[in-house]
Length: 230
Image 1 (spheres, rainbow, N blue to C red):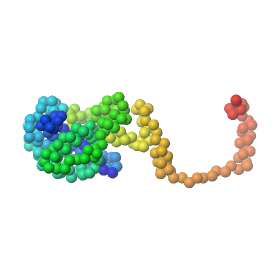
Image 2: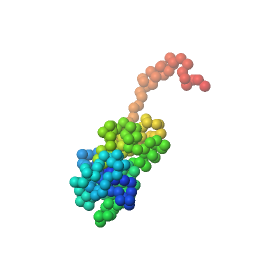
Image 3: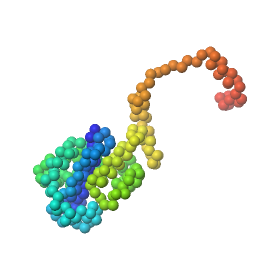
């Protein structure tokens, strides 16, 4: 199963106000394990960089001016993601920008149902707890010390690890998280996995007369056994 952890950086919050994408980062996930196959692209937004956005990701207008425009990299981005599910933290934000840019240059929009929102997953799994990427990295003991600024590729890499943990991590299907005791063991999955991995035939272990006699003598020597108490 192929999925794509995806993150973007932008010049602001709303594309309809003239803000644009400046970076896209993607990490391929196969069978719920990140691979070395990645897509990363800085983008020339063809506009100035507001101070508020620069303080978030550190990408200046001067730095980005020599990178391709979105329409020049759109097809390679589309080819990379294909129809794979997109794992995005706060998917509505990134999907709005991506589809605005794609539509502007005549490319087909990405269906909203193609996105898996890890922000919703985190809020559902840990209601009332902080659900931003840094908080989830701390919760799952994921090293994010390199994240001094937001960066699309780095955040996509961290997100791919967070996503795996939200699914159950290495204990997938058993939900034996010791974080807050809120997770219950899914007995149906447990039974299914036991049956799959340990498909044992029924076996019989009959007891012979000598063993029964020894057992009887042992019981006679017990003083005040528990089963005789009312």
